[in-house]
Image 1 (cartoon, rainbow, N blue to C red):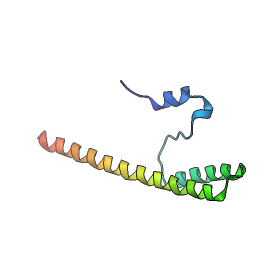
Image 2 (image 1 turned 180 degrees about the vertical axis):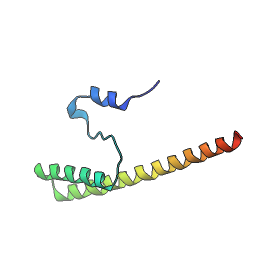
Image 3 (image 1 turned 90 degrees about the horizontal axis):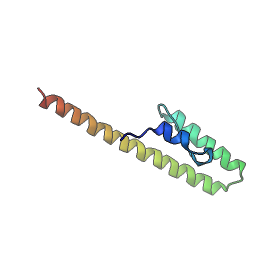
Length: 88
């Protein structure tokens, strides 16, 4: 069974999607996301302490995702190299 992310998000009502991004994620994209959310929080008069906590936890989440993805890619690379050596 396969899972198509684009179909999943296209079937969701607009109000239920927090973030959907397709493409490379670099520091510019992360900064843009954080700035956009902070601007929206300012627009609804959210407390500055809450905004700071949001940014802190968001950066931590991005960092954890980056670490996990790096570990996954390293494991995948190791397995591919092992398979190449074993198949000779």
